[in-house]
Image (cartoon, rainbow, N blue to C red):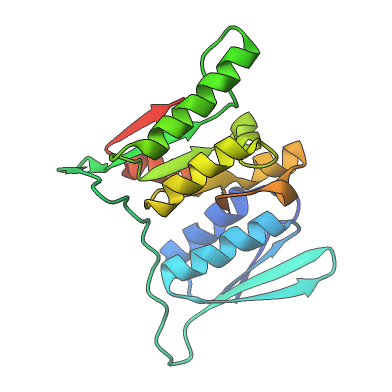
Length: 205
C-alpha cells in the first residue's frame, strides 16, 4: 500500500496528490493529514472514485485510507448537481456558476458594497434561473459564516432550488469562522475550480 505523507499541507494539495495516484491506477492508498478539512475532502474523493474510505486517528493527525470494495456494491460516483432549468452548451458545460470572493460588490464605500452583495444574493434566490453552483472563497466565506440572517436565508433558498453551495475550508480556517458556517458545504480549491470548469459561464460578484 502506498502512503502519502501530507502532514503540514493545506488542501487541496493532499487531495491533488491522492487523486493523481488513484488516476494512475493505485487502488490501495493511505494519506497522512493533520487537518480536518483534508479529512473531509479526501473522504468525498472516495465517494467520487467508488473506493471505500476509512479514517483512523494517528499521532499528530489522521490516516485516510482508500481501498477496493470487499464485494459489496461500490457507492455510485458523486455527480455535481445541476440546478433545475440549467442549460447546457455543446462542449461548454452546464448552467452557470457564481463566484463570491469577497463580502461586498465592487470598489468604493464598504457599507454600500456589502448591501449590494446582500441584494445580489437575494435577487438570485428569487430568480427562476438559479446558478448550478455558488462558490465562496476568501472574505466571501464570512457571508455564510457569521453573516447576517438575510444572506443566510437567500443562500439557503438557492440551495433548496438545487444550487450547490461550496465554501472554501482553508478560508474558513483562516478567518476562524468554520464553527459558524450556517449554510453550504465545506470544500476546497480543487472542487471549486472544478465547478467553474464544468459551468457554461462563471459570474464573479
